[in-house]
Amino acid sequence: MNKPSLLDFTQKELFTLIKPTFRVKQIFGWLYHNYANDYDEMKNIPKALKEELAEKYIVNPMKIVKKEESIDGTIKYLFELQDGKTIESVWLKMKNEEIDCDGNLVHEAKYTICVSTQVGCKVGCSFCLTAKGGFTRDLSAGEIVAQVVALKRDNDHKHNRMINIVYMGMGEPLDNLNNLAKAIEIFKEDEGLAISAKRQTVSTSGLSNKIDKLGEMDLGVHIAISLHAVDDALRTELIPMNKAHNIASIIEAVKRFPIDTRKRVMFEYLVIKNKNDDIASAKKLVKLLTDIKAKVNLIYFNPYAGTTYERPSKDSMVAFQEYLINHGLLCTIRDSKGIDISAACGQLKEQTQKEVS
Ligand code: SAH
Ligand code: SF4
Image 1: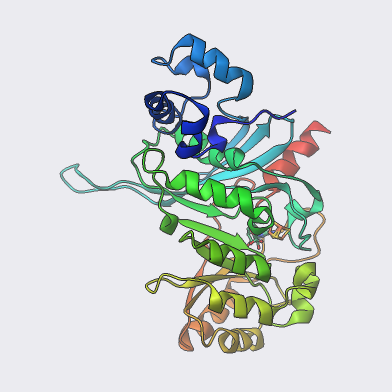
Image 2: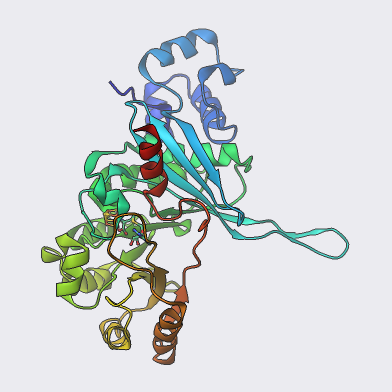
């Protein structure tokens, strides 16, 4: 059975579980400032307390079993959880460090961590490799938190260096809302990683009732909507649960979501050749997003063995982007980070399973 991890708890909860208070503060430091993997590393904690804790809680609930590094600085990790299941996380280099002509550091490199929230996914999108393996289970809050701790540790990224988190790995975050919300709170802890909600973006395939719930929790996180289609027939082909949560219901939920007035809601649009890459779709997209402070992120479909969908041409991507920009929408094309490794989510796991079998 899975043992709870020390990473499953907020500091306040640990205060009720461990006495005295100053020990909790020390343990918190070991967890989030030193990224301790086990009790042995916690030098100033008495042996008796460590033994008592070890009976109930493990420190880190998973280990890195595979790592793939891209020439662009992207690193993809495969983790094994306590029950032997595997998940992926990605370390993304968003900006290179800059050094001036005198050799002084102008700014440090900037990184984003893409985390998983479930083993597998229930949503079953027809273009997504994660969906192919079905759904196994939700991740605990500690298993979500542990991905960031492990990646910061592995990359020697000091606790006070800023990092952004995107919940865009395996799984549908809003389908695991309570554990997601808890992880967001733990990331925010001042004496922990202190990653503000503003630096955290939840990507969802559009469970509109859960978008409302997340909004009601008022955590301060950003949302990204995986829209991918502008009419319900195509969207249902791509994302079957669109039948229950159609485009109109998502747009309404987004309008109700508490958004920082300086920010925009990100709409992800996965572009698939001859499916949704035409200008007529771009036109409908402009119409759909008229009353929303939106930003569109176009994503190249990343093909894998066995899919019938194809990657769009660069020309159609650029034409689509230009149409949106010319009609007043902010629009970027996501650069395919880690294209030389197993780029899209689910691909490293898939590849490892093939190697094993
Ligand atoms: N379940 C959430 C978050 C995880 S999926 C969601 O769907 O938003 C994260 C992103 O990966 C989604 O935007 C999804 O569209 C994208 N994705 C999935 N399969 C892909 C593929 N083969 N090529 C490119 N992007 C893909
Ligand atoms: Fe799940 Fe997102 Fe993949 Fe759809 S794209 S199956 S919601 S992980």
